[in-house]
Length: 115
Length: 111
Image 1 (cartoon, each protein chain N blue to C red):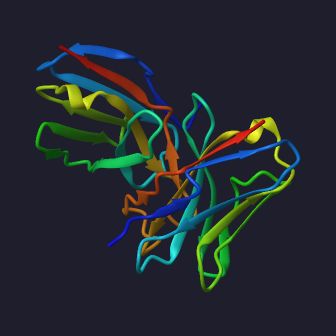
Image 2 (image 1 turned 90 degrees about the horizontal axis):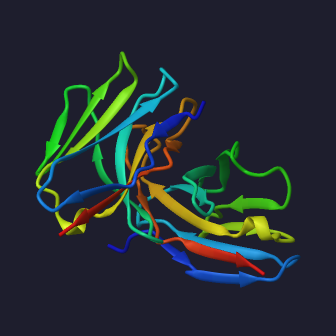
Image 3 (image 1 turned 120 degrees about the horizontal axis):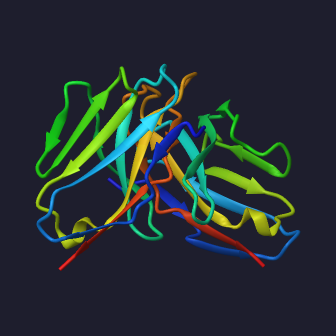
């Protein structure tokens, strides 16, 4: 049973380009969470999605960032017109339930570098 | 004030030592508590959940004090492989399973 799969592992984008980060949850998991870790900082919640629905996007920057989790296929975190400050590690996690006592498993992350 | 506060360290300890990490959280409505471990440039991995009754997993013991809003992790007989950053994590209030992370405490176990 494969874990949470993220790709690409490393992504380099020039300022102004778009970045697309993909996350395939564990089999049977319908809840996906995205977190961002800026250099030398802790992980910060960005967005929580269930299949075809955004449940909580309170951690998403107001502009340029969007997320989706379609009925088929992986969850996508999209960053338009990237800036240097978007350089970070982006981690995705999944769970079979939204219950709060579930310590979910993270994917290995996508390291975005904006040059 | 940060929602979850940890001493960043680093804690440099000799192999075989016992080391304790502490963490405080600000939201009294937090419901679930965890310790995660993060190796350099890797994803965080769940180490253990934390309960008021205390829980132990091998050399690791975690404790929660709800009245003081304080969480601890004790590592006995430290191994070189325990070197990592230890993240204190609580669930936020509101819907779903949103986690709030501390910035971590760095542990270096030396020969």
